[in-house]
Image 1 (tube, rainbow, N blue to C red):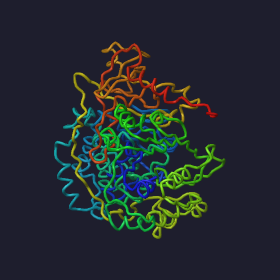
Image 2 (tube, rainbow, N blue to C red):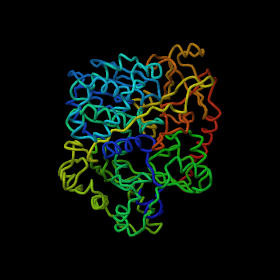
Image 3 (cartoon, rainbow, N blue to C red):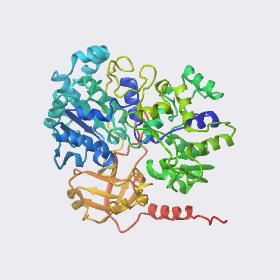
Image 4 (spheres, rainbow, N blue to C red):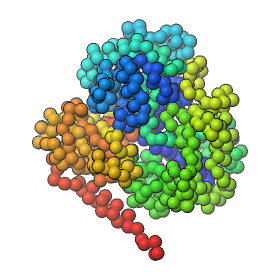
Length: 594
């Protein structure tokens, strides 16, 4: 896809679903450690003594990993959960967190920095590790910042809602409890300070020496099975494969020689910028493969306006998803059972995907992309995806030793896989950081511009449920809908009583951006002042209410903090009615004979 954009479309306007999930991970870990990926393999959790989960719900979002985590917790490892909501991992059969810090949405940076404050001011940091592995001058500057009393748990308690004593004890446990591992998810990254929080988490691991061995590390829980691979392959508008900036002439030269074209040194547009430019009339076409931006991206009104303004929208997907409602051309995709290739997961593991049946549409996805490229003069000549992997290995240092032959022999490998690590790298930063020295960075808390007030006094945060995957494009077409037939709004009984809302009532969920209607359930899993819902069903379109605020460094949308009001409702919102009518018209399928 990124080669199509750069070598055939001749621009850098390529982006990936990581824009709306883990782009802050790439930025934050790249700045502190020198590479944009998690530090451990999943086996590492078996050696953890203390596990910190920040902004993640592994039992629902990452159930395979969660099973391994719970096994370790049952063996005696301690658990700290930092999340506005009491997720199942906080308390379930045979598992109970030592601490649950129920912070107010949007205050991640303040809480993480306060943990660092405790570690520094109480002398719990690993000086030997820091002197050997990190930039000492930067550490001294960071210590001056983080030791300031304004970062103390007591000073931030009113702002974050986290009891100061609990926060202090949690910080002490992480720093002194043995091998400390941090796992985090979209509740960290999907904020206006998502990148800052990732940097703060990286600081915590360096402070305590929890890097470079089994049972420790900084581990992002990725949102989709191959989103790591998408990032690795240069799908961001500013990076070529291997996380190398497009402005670097020595990197562009590698691809210019391989592809026989000149590559633009200027970064392209991110997804939100593409939609902005479309509304302005300066961005005219989009090729969207395997991503449903109309349902997954924030401020649905704006996304729809951008798609509607384009001259050509091509959607390439397994199903007629919500974005396909605005498509001029729909290209049916192939499932994982119908194609050869690789997926790369959150532990940087490159796994083979093997075709077991012929594609019902006649072509594998890479063949369709190649046909489109050749129709525009690309002259691509791949006959098998192994040849694409050979090109990746020839042009990307971290993949230099990867081949289908190696994958068949080993089953899978983890990058970096090159001359220095010919069979891959299960664990990063063992003897030193990729950047040479680890870099401590100041993490000043800046409150989001999205704030509760008289009109919108509640804060909405969103997430997933076990029975559905992401926007539900696949799982809604299965019997899983028996368990979760609709999105439900979780609201605290106190907030519900104030609004005259009872269990199962239809409610209007409104924000500055828009409104929708859904049923409510009363629960103390969320604190008073906070409401929660999922985003699996297009009939709800939860992202109608999310705003265009985003991470300062990466434009990752701030899904996790939206000021809203909840009130009783008699039926669907105007948006829901108009959207459903448009979708019905857009999905009229002419008989094949015509």
